[in-house]
Length: 173
Image (cartoon, rainbow, N blue to C red):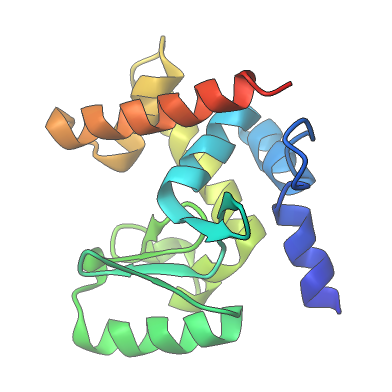
């Protein structure tokens, strides 16, 4: 029951006009990041079809370029730990914001800590803030650098994806 309540705090109501979930607002406020941007990044990174909607999914892994979605944090943690034994850590991303385990391993006691939805969102917001502070002026550019600090075509594509999600969100009734 507690897991269901926690998960509901991360997912918006299915009615499109609903505000963002509190977890996104809290993490965004802590790092002074636009909450809608944090939502759009999580949607881009871990979005999964749930019923008729595509929503961020907290137990998402990307291992060596292939995405995996799990029913529970426990299942995702077991898969993540197994992956750390066979795959370079810099080729593993976890959670709502797809935090890279190799680049950010010092921020977690265990790789599975990256699967904690609130911690993952807070770190995602922090990294977005850092990218923005490196080159102020555009939150979409910060999102592109969040995805690929080196820039280039992958960052530009990502910027467009996040921009589309933001635009869809702002066009809701």
